[in-house]
Image 1 (cartoon, helix red, strand yellow):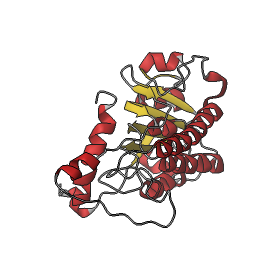
Image 2: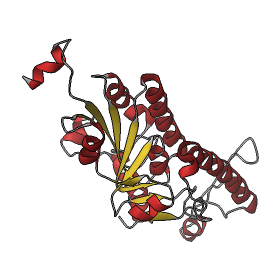
Image 3: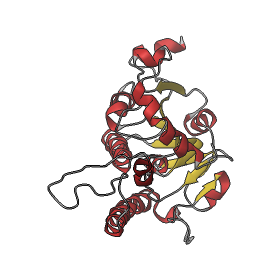
Length: 269
């Protein structure tokens, strides 16, 4: 009889929690299983609109990535949460750091495992300097621009102090936006710890103590604790293309593999 409840107008349905999985590096380049606003939009919209969910649970496992994509995904979640008046809970698996923590802050409450990594509220840029390498092989770099800063941070020429200064200024602006987002979402739950916005990161309970999370909890038991033992779950994840489903690796995936591995490795994963 229980499965028929949703089809009978005068019978109350069991609570529904929509579960959205957000796993991977955040990037607008669409490499492999990278998270992007375009790639997650459909599943996020469906999760909020189908079946009148009592709540939405974000299951997050991300070391971060693009600040813009992090902001766009989080903004979409907040817009729908407010439009549908649905509470949002974030559950951190291995890591919600940097852009991954930006996503977690889209939730009204954040739950972690004892071993979850949270934080890393900062901005990073990494590249290589290859000018000596190409010189050793007699390769001449030829670049012609209109605009003196058009080739800023070119990896095939010596680093310029003015380029680094400009990059740091851009990073500072992004960092300020990140901090503002965290403060807006977490409010007076945040501690006064001086390292909170330095890019430092912490494990489980320490993250709770600092106000970066609300408690230790896992998605199914916590949602049943909050919404009742008869809570139903509907899972939403990104669609995978035909080649990905059969395990085929695209050239673009290979090119992004080093950056992806480095992003996870920063947190010991």
